[in-house]
Length: 151
Image (cartoon, rainbow, N blue to C red; front, top):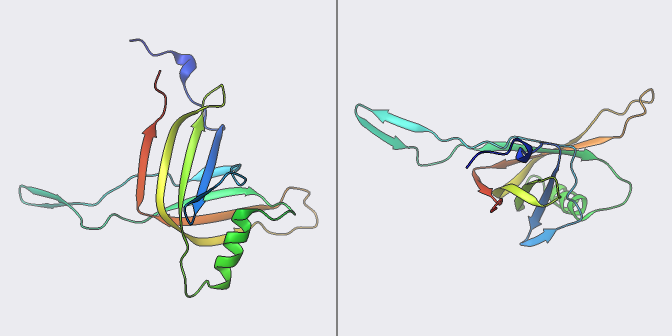
């Protein structure tokens, strides 16, 4: 079956659904940039024996978006987590979907048991009229890639 060049997915059409305490957050789905989608593993070699390391390496997933004046569920969750920053981790699951030309999910990554490692904002500058961007970095060790394009 030949590959249709028009079916190539573009990297600028995507959504992120974040599940905190098992509930999907469908309000905070728009992000400017996502980086850190990566699967890797440590392979041990001893002579002719090849094995996998017991623990998968932690990866960092970074989400960036504009800051809005209204409160969103993700901002609320991050604010609550910041109150207990030194004592508690709030784990989240993330579903990142690339959309096809019709706006339907075509491929996805499922990031499980991610926790917020850092939350930062761009510099404030009175001579700059750009939108304030916030970045959220999550640590994770479990990533699954799923193809949703069934036909």
